[in-house]
Length: 444
Image (cartoon, rainbow, N blue to C red):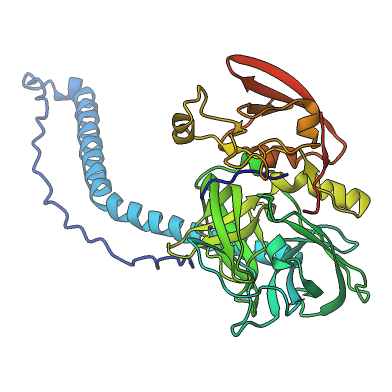
């Protein structure tokens, strides 16, 4: 699929907990007067008759007085020492939380780390392997001086050797690929099953380890990225700088639905990426293709890019956006990206205002500046065959809304070539439903 792409890729360290003490100066105890009820006077010579009764009453009154004084003193002591006790308990609880989080991250690193590989590639010297600059950087890592070698990260998704990574880690022109397992074992018999086209906003490729040399491969557990919320803790794992294998960093999900334009350190081209998670977990060159993991140890994203001029701003592809492709590759061993055949602009309130549109969400098949060479609807494509037109706004795919959380591309990539889908279209003031049979992404 091709589309118009709107212009749109730190180490996080935990501050040491401050240590402090709380000292409290108790207030002097207040003097409280108690009035003891007076006993009735007894007539002379009547003690023997009534003495025992009145003595018992006096003892009861004295007991009540003692209880009241004890209660007051107990409350005063509790009030003056409970503050210090509460602070001590609070610090203890915080320490326990920090310790627990550290242990959890350690477990995640051990469990998920065994499903992470370093991807090492050789690129044809005729390919443009120079460095490019942009607001966002993609993270294949190429050494300086126009080297034809590069490195990235991959995620094992099947025990028979299928690995998922980024397209820009194994770009067109790649001549050989090897992977390094978490235990340091290097496997050299690796091929590229397929990659998304350079025009696709989904930066994904799949590899096949043909010979494991008897090593057992453990696939990662894939999560559900649609359930991820802003502020949720995450862990990133990757081959930082192409030399620090399985580096672990942690942070949170800072945002979602991000659209960016990014450039690769392996090539001079730029690409538009859509529907990304934003995270402050440190992502560096070489991290591309590595997993972004939730606290359940599930992969909910694939690390892809960072903001080169920002602090703590990294991006990852939500795993749900790739699930259709994953299912297809696991089932058939081949790769084919579903293809619709429109050039579109993701709608935002600003874009809707610019084009004077009545809706703020959807995929707008915008008018082309050069219809002869870049038509809005590609002739002969599934979209053209289904009757889609310039200025149509696609609002749903099989009843699921296109919005900040779900771009058209990400929704289509839940399906495979040959699937029949229904698109909801806003055409002028009318809403219509169009049935489309998805094709296969052409090579060019």
